[in-house]
Amino acid sequence: MARKHPRHGPYDDIDREEETPAIVEPCWLCSRPTGKTIVWHHPVPKSRGGRDVVPMHPICQQTLITNFTNSELQRHGMDVEALLATPAIRKFVDWVAGKDPDFTAPLARKQR
Ligand SMILES: [Zn+2]
View 1: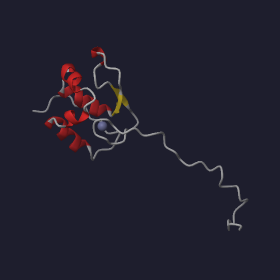
View 2: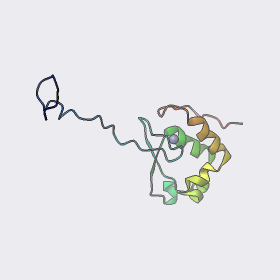
View 3: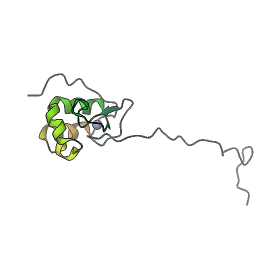
View 4: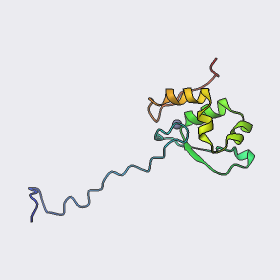
């Protein structure tokens, strides 16, 4: 039952580690895999007693805090569906969907 490996010994392949990439957390907001930079976002702002954190892209967090006040974020809490139902967020997520996970852009001003 010898396998035909013309190279060296039969055990050569054994310790070839599979490249297991570090666990990729999907972004809470846009569901894309996170990139090099993961932001641990508090859906309920820390200042409002929020303890849970979710992985997010910097750009996604930026979008949230640009579009919502702390009070609104607190109100929505972990309910990402409600956030996604917001037209501005929906639009952003659709737009960012095709971007690289490491894509960031300065979202300097609010869009008119
Ligand atoms: Zn994201």
